[in-house]
Amino acid sequence: MTIENAEGDRLLRNEWIICPNDECRKITLKAFLFRYDYEYGQYKIGELLKSWNLLPNSFAKVFPEYIPKAIRNDYEEAASILEQSPKASATLSRRCLQGIIRDFWGISKARLIDEINAIEDKVDPLTWKSIDAVRKVGNIGAHMEKDINIIIDVDRQEAFLLIELIELLFVEWYVHRHERELKLKAIAQLADIKEEQKKK
Figure (cartoon, rainbow, N blue to C red):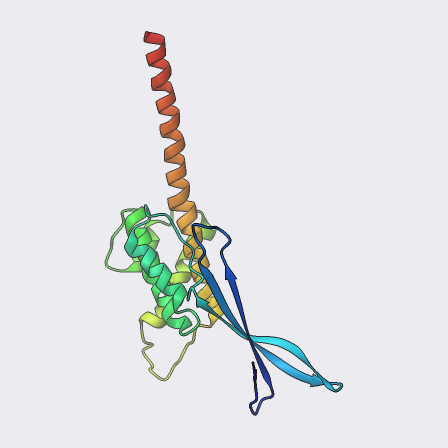
């Protein structure tokens, strides 16, 4: 579908995919808005101006249920509102991070900065700096500046980076811990089986 406006023609294109898995068959629907340029007597598709995830309405990944539901909900909501409000998305990422620290590390203090400082000696320096960055960017949406005339915005890419860090922490902290526990339990069970076989 083509759209005419004062800034030039636009082309709106839809793309849909049906999952080939017979048990799934879910539909993914996306929309793309392109510049539609007229050159040398013909139209051609120009740069991509914007894209939307229509179904599902979020790019959030599905994480295992052993990650607490409240934390996963905050992550999924941060991903779902990224396009509409990057600042609100960053605020939810901040909240999600606080939930992760309290659940995974068992640390609960009055302020998020105190909780982050409490894990500084438990994680590598780059991870800690990235975690503190989520706090700082999330604070833009969570707290108003003393001077209300100062407006600091958060753009889509910045909010997206925070979501990616949350995903990284899910994998490195929760998923890796779970997989480690499964492997260690399997080894312990194997030793028990061998002991029983020796007795017989």
